[in-house]
Image (cartoon, rainbow over all chains, first blue to last red; front, side, top):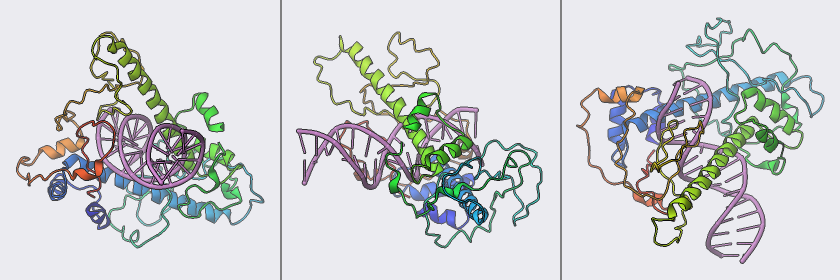
Length: 171
Length: 171
DNA sequence: GCCATATGAATGAAGG
DNA sequence: CCTTCATTCATATGGC
């Protein structure tokens, strides 16, 4: 929990020294090494970002879904979620420019890491260094077709961390 | 079952797009999200690998059993988990002669019940970010007391596997 | 009522 | 930072 707290208060990639300190502190509770702390931050950051990303894309989908989509059953697929994020200091505020990220983003993740609905506080907090990823018009791809967001599933799947749900046996 | 089929036909780690498609397809049968598909593949692959591994180790045991063990009361190897190993360079643990595993098999080690107290800190892996970081300052100093590993939580009924850094839940 | 097993989800650790 | 893997956690379920 200590780690979450730090994370929450803005620590993202602690320096070696910070890691040392944290480690020392945590070692009061159990055996731990610097690398554990290091990994923790790496993973946590990444996963948090994924969630965020996902949340955004979901948002996006909702936005788009406002119209069209007659019925469930649809096809669409194709990168509904794919938002190329420009990593690398995307200009903070939503500037949608393209920026033609010199790199080519390799793939982008789809969305895993959903769950969690309690928006709970934080998240507003990340005014810090957020290497946010914003969507930027990925020149290629994405244009493919604008069919709409799959949400067509008829049912909104959101339902909260709904795990399970009917899923069973569709496989 | 669709998933098994795909798996069978070679899909192991579908790309984001593939996942999307699959998801879309499956959503005809029930509520499902990309992450479910993602997890499914991850788990399936892992478990398949695991089975295989297990099977091999069993095999191995049989081979060895010709001479070593007095009785073949197989100690519920069950997990016989070993510990950290690096991916890559399969370390057949216990390098028994032959094995000729040389193949590209991704199979890595199997562990036979050689308990062996692992001296932690065998992280020879130096060469990573964190290591570089960690090495700088005077390491050695802050060793606060180590109290021990809050052993409690780690309880499992199976065979030991010794240490296993029960780092659980200190966060 | 326990077990053993199965499977989705999550997290730690590495490699790249 | 991104992927992938191994492990582990938590349930769900089928037997006995």
